[in-house]
Length: 494
Length: 100
Image 1: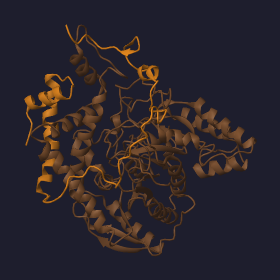
Image 2: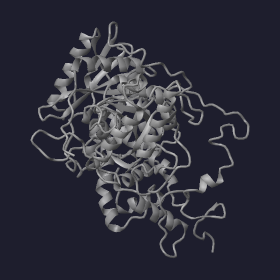
Image 3: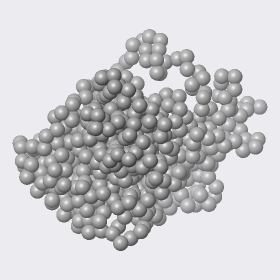
Image 4: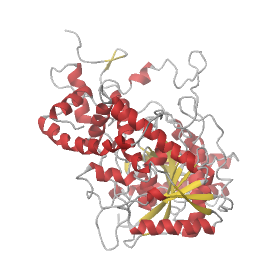
């Protein structure tokens, strides 16, 4: 057997295939084997080794013919099971969509295949992307490849893109797609020591992505380096007339413009992010992050985002409200599950289908959403939350007068054992307290690994940029990456 | 504001999710915890603030007024549309009898 290619990332694989150091087929075969050997992580809902090999063969044939291989040529990736993939089961990790085989392909996945990528399989997630620990999937919990030093307890890979984070951290996929509604790319990336970026709202088409909260949902890449994220985001993004909120703008060449020289950039440190309940290790890594960015030439300035505290409660009105509306489509008529008790009518069929098909967290959020949108409560809850959202967004607008990007922790704690936060939904929600404000404002935000805590678990740092300025976010991420030198990998136990 | 079992039953009915007594009982404190927590939004002074739904400045586009402007979202896809239906019949979605 040739060298181990599963330690390589997107850029190394693409460049290696293009240079002829190895074939795309060799890469796909090795990752297929790695996926098959990692069933214990439960990162994949379905695996598609044939699809990975077919794409690899196409890349190898193109190379033989001297054709362009594309920005992701020869790179096999994991696809979060929220993206519709033609004739491959797409479930959003729910029972209600079990067996659903879309007859079309999502724009983002199609863009990736057009760029030469191949699919290893569909990645597990929190059901309908609702969760922060990957414990709400109908297809079982996902385990992080990381464990606390001296413990065998299964740890959370974060959520909702937990299959993605687990697979990339475990080196069974060089990269994966994620989606971020209120932290679902950044929090799992932080928990597993990888990078993940949510671009500006509208950069990536939502067409063919199972909808959770449409004004917040945004796709993005998860990979082990900032360069790999820049490459893959470039392949995913682009104007799509099929998504009414798609940005009609050119996609910059983020990879080509990467630079870790931050001279002239001002980095804002929001005072309101010093919250109770944040681990000291996280606060220490934040200090370290400031020093790194200063070393890269940036100026550090204190800023205020006064409505930070209200972002999370506003999110937990807006997101469930949109979800209750979006998830009305699961009715047992058009696709997925139908539960029709003997002699039941149409209304009973709806109610029974949805009772059997949705998990507890999904039901909880549909009920909250239905309640806050119902007559008599709409203004008190939903309109008020939308106004608070405007204030959160204005906080950023004011901050941009003083700074060009913002540095903050990604999460208040490191990963936690699976099952440890289940008794109260609210404690789980607090995981996203640092991630949600940028989601409400639609801003580009990234998590990059900063180091390990004393338990040996990864910690992430978050960078938030101005709308459309993914480049500054990626550049600052690169500056941290170069200085953190994070090359830890989880020890294989699976 | 808080919800009782009767209110939760009403919401579940509106959301078309069947729930038994036990599940309704369980949901009451869970929903109240969340609702009590989001109450804090009432503290925020929102005088003169317009509610926001679109966060990034964008304009709504109109597509060309032609048939099948985008073939992916155009017509002629009946079989694809019903391919995943639990009870498709004669090219239609099948549902239980609605009118006696």
